[in-house]
Amino acid sequence: MHFRSEKEIRTDVCIIGTGGAGLRAAIEARRHGVEVLLMDKVVIGTNNNTRYSGGGFKAALPGILSSAYTKIFDSPREHFEAALIHGEYLNDQWLVETLCYDAPARLLELKDFQVEHFRDLYLKVPYPHGTGLVKPLINKIKEMGCKTRPGLVATDLSVRDGVVKGLFGFDVYAGSWISIFAKSIILATGGAGEIFERNDTTANTTGDGYALAYSAGTTLRDMEIVQFEPYIQAEPGLPMMDRHECEAEFYGILRNRYGEDFLKNYLPPSKEALDAFHKQFGSHLTDIRERVARAMAQEVYAGRGDQGAVLFDLTHVPDEKWNADLASRYTRKVLLRGFDIKKKPLHVFPGAICTLGGIRINPFTETDIKGLFAAGEVAGGVHGAARLGGDALVETIVYGARAGKAAALHALSTPKPTSLPGSSRARKAFETFLANPASEAGNPAQIKKRIKSIMWQKVGLLREGAGLRQALQEVRQIQEEALPHLFAQTYRDLREAAEARNMVLVAEMVTRSALMREESRGAHYRLDFPYRDDRNWVKNIFLSEKEGRMSLRKEPIRLLQVRPQCRSKFGLEVRG
Image (cartoon, rainbow, N blue to C red):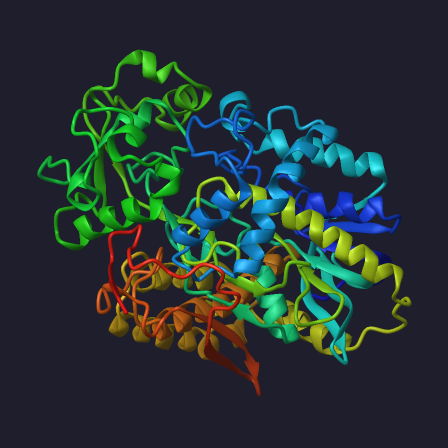
């Protein structure tokens, strides 16, 4: 089997990924008069984490943004300081400051794009809540004349002398090999939640942007930091989905196999009487989910779990709470699928929701490669070791706009590329996948399954050195023994082969980084180092390719405007 044809595409700005960051970048770039192409390996704007998000924004817009399920700050400075405390000071303070001070204006601007319910998507837009953001942005890019290409899979970036010239890939629908000549490229490909067996991300979040950037020579940071969402269904026969912001479920009780209300042992309540989560524990769930997820995992680790999960008791929640909002009604009618929560508790357990590390950028979204920009979840440094609820969506808008502007300005001052180095090498790799015979070892679906199992069992919520070293050994084994036999019998299979290759690479990044960070901080928890070590680890981990190998280094955090407090929001002992 071969590619049916070879095609060339030329544009000023090419954006890979059509979630919130990619769509907002396209609008901003087009405002500057350049030609814009948005490409997605599936359908434009549909199968991404923005669309399936909880739908909450966080910014200093008191009285405008809803505070129903998250705290809204009175000033950008208050937002900035809270994000640093929550991120346990691993954040790039320049990036956080930019986010917090840009956010109010950028969110208010959404009204101009007919995003009617940006104040409270989760209260006004039926699930998936993010549709209320994505759909108007798609309409806007079409109105502005941006070009879109669904079904294009990016495989390699073309770089010469430290400057991006374009990219290579293939068209899943036409079976064509594609060369895209572009003055600027924006990576807006999202995260890598799919490398974990349990997750609440779309099936397309396979770390493609991380792999593209790394292979092209850019630096990534803090890849060990992965956020896990607590209340993901683990009930046999029910979908593995998060419950999202749901009024009824904020009155539920987490219990272990013995029926004990265990959360108060890890997160002492400020109010003993049964009440909504934020009233009982003094913080909204979305602003402390890392601590709740870790408590659930520790109960199972200690042998107090049930079927590898914990129990969510909703038997006492009155009917009026289930009719209080869209999310509650949706959960009961659709997600529960007839499960009688009045009679018995539901099995739940955390899953990966957001990769907080990513490509190193500055506030202008520039990477190490001139002309290559990154925005949204694919970029690292904004959130540090943990993320406040609502900061992910606002990040896509703030940094999407910044990436679009920066890419457009670069394109306006850059001549058109006349050739793309690396074409034959990039194409040969994927022609090999098409030519390889089918085999059990090279089955992309099986490789994905192996990676997901390894990462979940050994690099999940609770980590320790021996397990991480074993995971790294198993990932290397896949690289050496399985990837050379990777095959594809159709062009859709070829997309899965590309994803499998990327997932293996990203799994190595996350595992190596987690092994290097010998402490616990935010969402990263080491059983063998169960404390925050400010003496040795107020540092970021950066990784890049050096002579064909993955090289890691740690560096002190930069722009230290705010000194770390000797207190952890996550209940960790702080040393140093």
